[in-house]
Picture 1 (cartoon, rainbow, N blue to C red):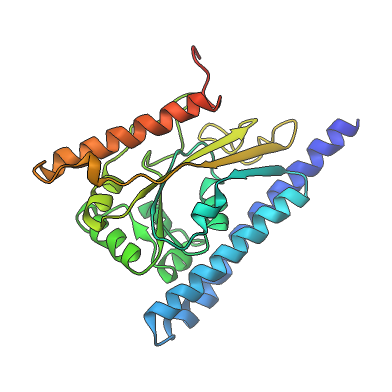
Picture 2: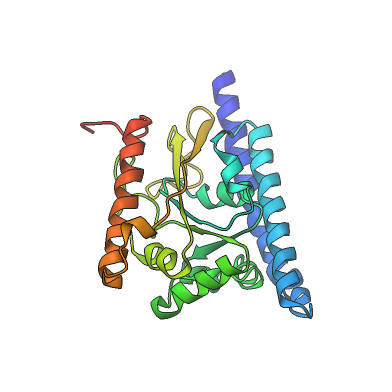
Length: 264
């Protein structure tokens, strides 16, 4: 009986949190975004908006933990908080990955799907924070490089969508590699893991696990891309080499940390 009550409480708390998230996003789009548009100084406006988003997501993650829905275990968070701009490249097992990473990174911009620019709950947020859309390959690298030059770390999920299975990744796209080469910024690989699985591509929000899920974040050492791309190497080949190296390292570490199981 107690187990059923606990599951029911976590289902309610999860639904309430998602509803609150959507309502806050809608209010942001309808109220904060128009007010932010009146702010005369673009740089300070973006800094204020990204700071509000960071603290809101910190509060949301803390509320989910207090409600007993989830726990969070982070290793290497100091590298996300260092203030040095980097390209944060992570695998993407769960819907909450971006929420957790934005909560951990004070000055962050992220790449978002083009659909979010039309979503009534998100369009104001992504515009006011000057997030980068993945819809325009031609402008993607320049937009990301500009944010890095402005002092923001770029959060990128190169799989493009949530991972297809608990033991498998989508092939990485090369946009982050082109950006790293263009901006000369280091890549900061991040391992994301959720146990038991929750909010995956195959699960709805109401598919709440039988026990609180644990999200584990492991921030690995930053990687400079220059050694992976000699000066005489064509840009397309250099980006392919960087992408292949980062994808292989993240995949190997997922096995090394026991997040992926051999033979599954």
